[in-house]
Amino acid sequence: MALRLRTLLAAAWVEAFVKTTGSLGLHVHARLEPDRAAGLARSLAGRLAREDSEGVADVRDPVSRKRRVLVDWRQSSRRALTIVPYSLRATDEPRVATPVT
Image (cartoon, rainbow, N blue to C red; front, side):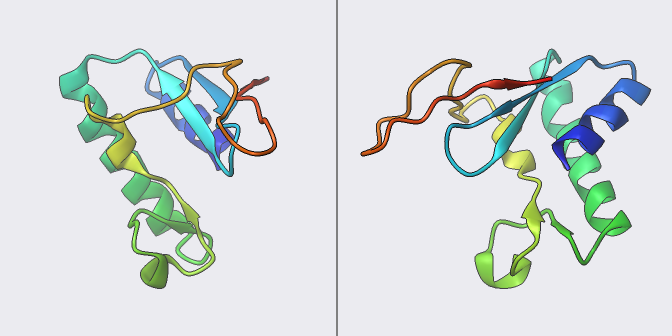
């Protein structure tokens, strides 16, 4: 799904990069003005959820999304915390956030 999102961003002339989180998911990074980022992220998350309602969700509630992939557009806010590439996670088993090519 992250690669699909990167393709949609490329169609909007936005260069994006995918990386692992060092945990369970993937992050898609793109250089956007903060005012544009949240709206575009929400719009694309909704589009992906509509195109594949069986496999994608744009709501965080675990009961509502069941086993679907969450496209978490809320991570596009200024207050969101993300781990930078090649950072170690503070877990019992060290994991690393790495770029995906």
